[in-house]
Amino acid sequence: MKKYSVVIAGGGSTYTPGIVMMLLNSLDKFPLYEIKLYDNDAERQKIIGDALAIAIQEQNPEIRFNYTTSPEEAFTNVDFCMAHIRSGKYKMRELDEKIPLKHGVIGQETCGPGGIAYGMRSIGDIIELIDYMEKYSPHCWMLNYSNPAAIVAEACRVLRPNSKILNICDMPVGTLRRMSQIVGLTPQDLKIRYFGLNHFGWWTSVKDQKGNELLPQIRDYVSQYGYLTKIEVDTQHTDASWQETHKKAKDLLAVDPRFLPNTYLKYYLYPDYVVEHSNPEYTRANEVIDGREKRVFSAAKSIIEQKTAKGGEFHIDTHAYFIVDLARAIAYDTNERMLLIVENNGAIPNFSHDAMVEIPCLVGNSGAEPLNQGKIPTFQKGLMEQQVAVEKLVVEAWIEHSYQKMWQALTLSKTVPSATVAKALLDDLIIANQDYWPELK
Ligand code: NAD
Ligand code: LMR
Image 1 (tube, rainbow, N blue to C red):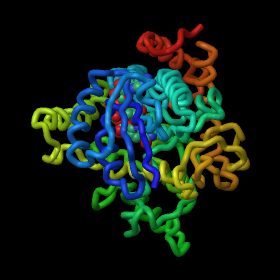
Image 2 (image 1 turned 90 degrees about the horizontal axis):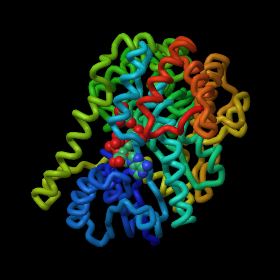
Image 3 (image 1 turned 180 degrees about the vertical axis):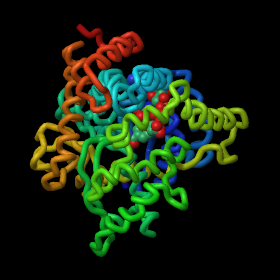
């Protein structure tokens, strides 16, 4: 059986230890020859890298491991690049969230002006990773889950249309785990239909293995409790702010009870509520810095100090198994059905063919084959047209260095009340992002 080589781009990410532990736990399904980490922040990556070196040496010494900031070393002889970079790191995430709130607009990592600002930072970095990959390992596939996935995916479509890159998001994976708990099954038991954009979609069907439609049962539950479950089954979206978000799904459902909503729709359907319930001095970035980042880096430091990982400081990120499933689908041509962000091309027949949509696809060794989801209703179509235009304008603005298009993108975002607010916001975001964005003219 072939053993695969993987490079994790964003080696210093808070998610890297959990993903590496998960890879080590999946070797029977996805055998590995080598794991490499790549980051452009040597100091941050060193902490995670040194701790993982100890953990891997103890657990699976036969697997080669190293970490580097050299693109050539990182991307030579690899079969898969798992990419989870954060352009500008938490320092910039904090500004993405706090600057809009000063203007009375939602401050969020991927939705609204925060997502737009983050998108403008990420496009160049992701294209750079693709180019390294293609230069040093032309056969390699990139499995990208760096945010903001919608804008990143559109940039890949426009700028690197023939590259081997699949864009995927964990939010539907986490919510499906919740749904499976609600109906007393496992996520693997459920077969879904879904349409939308990334962080902007709806489940139209959730069936069990026998073909029974479970959506009405899940809907009854969500209409009372949202996606809050009695037992916590989603290992990722668990902090206090996430519990609020899961609860809010109840109000998202009320707007169109036919379909089960993606939790991120709260930023588009209830932006006023979100602003009212935000603390402009302490946002999600602060919650992550004080929570996940502290936990992961303290665990790594403790492994390094003690020279052993046997204390169980690093945990398997069970929720990230979908990344192994995706790699397996390509490696073994499994044709597994997965939700991916792909070019529409008629899969939603009454929606723009060149929009990047999130829909179920069959995944095999030549990539993703999108499955037709049928025509979509006017309400969702209207919302999606508006949002996809925002995402396209951001990518055009990045390519053309266009101030005008960025202003249009912000004006068009459903989260921004007027062109006046959009302009004031843009001017603040330009100052904050001067080290990252192209200079706009
Ligand atoms: P993090 O800041 O802890 O880690 C990101 C790492 O990327 C940092 O070490 C940083 O130095 C590195 N980096 C930044 N720019 C880089 C570049 N150009 N080249 C190489 N490395 C670079 O962030 P995190 O909270 O662990 O999140 C990582 C990413 O994963 C984010 O984009 C986040 O939004 C995304 N994410 C995606 C999903 C999903 O399912 N789509 C889920 C969770 C997180
Ligand atoms: C993160 O985990 O930082 C994000 O990608 C999602 C969130 O929890 O805000």
